[in-house]
Length: 309
Image (cartoon, rainbow, N blue to C red; front, side, top):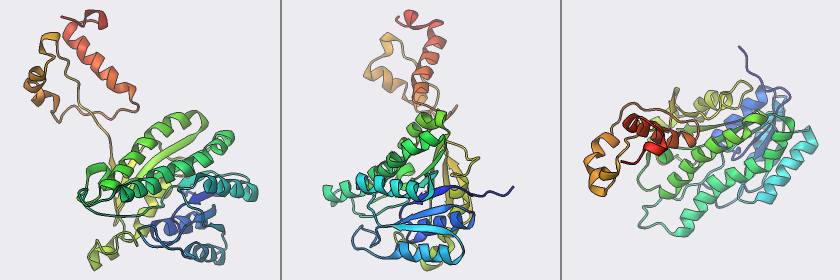
C-alpha cells in the first residue's frame, strides 16, 4: 500500500531543520504542498535564520511545491495569517504538524518563571495557536490531520526539564480532547514522542548515538499519523528505527463504604488502589466516573441509591 499526500496542504512548524525539515521534505516527496514554518535561531528560542527558505528551495529543486513562513507560533494572529495565506494559495489546510520547540533546561530550584512560561508558551500554547488557526478550515472541509509533539519527558519525566515536561504532557492532553471534538468532522489528532538528534539535543547525545537517532527515522511514524487512514488519539514513540505506543491507563476502581471512607481507610486500601493490574486506556474522561460506578455496583449490588451503608 502506497501512502501519498496528493492534493493535501500541510503546515509543519519548526521545519527549518531537524525533525520538521525531514517531515516537510517527505510530505513534499509524496505530493503535499508544504508551508515550511520556522522562526529560526537557537534552541533556546533566540535569534533568527533563513533555514525555512533553504528547505523550500530543496523541495522546489526536487519538483515539489512549498512556501516559507517566519511567523512565531506564540503569536496567534501570525498563525491565523499563515493559514489564510495557505488557503488563498492552495485552497485549504489539511495537515498540521506541531513541531516547533525550544529548550531552557535547569533544575526547578534554579529555573526562573520566565524560562518556565516561555517553554510552555512555545510548545503548548504554540501548538494550540496553530491548531486553532486551522481548526475551522478543517471543520468546513470535513478533513483534518493534526500531530502534536510530546516527549518522554512529558510522558515519564526527566531531571532538569520541569518546563518542558509540563508542556509536553499538556500536549498529550490537548490531543485527547481535540480528537473527541474533531471526530464528527473527520479531524484526527495524534501525538508523537520522538527521540532524535537535532539542534535541540546535539549536546545531550554522545556522537555515535546522535548519528543513530537521525531524525529521518521518526518520519515513518509521523507521516502515518497524519495520513488519510491514520488512527486517532494515538501516542507513538519513535527513534533510531524503534517504534512503540504509549497510553494513559487506569486500573479498576476500589469503592470504599462510608465507614472506610477516611484517610486511614484509604491508607489501608492503598495496596489495592495502587495495584498495577487490570489496566485499561480510557478514550474519554467520562470513563473514570463510569469505572467508579462499576466498582460501587460490585460492592452494593445496585446503583447510586444503594451506595450508602
